[in-house]
Length: 372
Image (tube, rainbow, N blue to C red; front, side):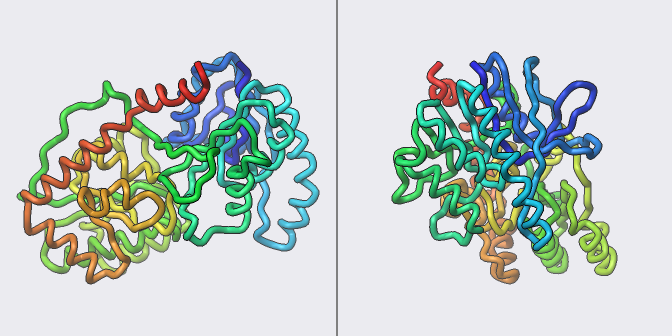
């Protein structure tokens, strides 16, 4: 089987291997187990490989480098107009050679892919829509357009669109799904945590405004001011890093908050294991991997009510759903910090739930979809 992947994820060529964002590649390595050949249509990056990027394990890869584009300025719009015909032809050519077409959405490349796939009604196709599928959420026009195209059983044939959560009014193309990070074999015993020593919070994600790392810092800072022995580690990089560093230094909370940058999966895993809470006050999510990963290791999740997060946290039974009201959210956390037995019950519920979703289960579901 020739398996074509159409994605916006930037790829790096290093020593004749292709590297990209680790959670994405880890998932694609499962898909590609059942392919004889992979065609990857994606932007090629000139950046240096970082600890959060890993390589594809497949040995037969054809890579089609395309130019990325956006419509964020007048100049970018003009550049996009000239680039789209060539990119669309590259996507079409890959789809023509493929036995199975796989789209990664949402994104600009995903939008083009969702349009081009209409020309191949008889080929088997899947799309991973990794964004927020809540129809009530505010989304960019391009996101709404690709969701509409993929959902349409008239325009999009032989397609299964994998989404996070179950949403009323979904078409038969839509299949509720999940993602995973760990194998069954990695289910080592959870380190028991108590409140006798420092209470550790962990944030894993890009340091960008949409992930709200500032809010995570302020939440832990307020707990510190109230006398709790707390600490926060932030893993990730992004445009907000300098602002975060300045805030930490100006408010003299270096002994409470630390920025760890991008780290390997093993390093982050060890941080989850020693942490009490995983926090992600994000503006928008699909299936937040950081939350699911933290829960896997017994961290109680602290997250906003976006996308399928309320379902993941069982509407507050296995985690803390925050309202982005600092005083109210601190109050919720204090309730847990004052009742260690209640905390441990919530921690156990979180890990029991997350440990259902392993890469082994993920692979079985994929095999079924690929009709193998």
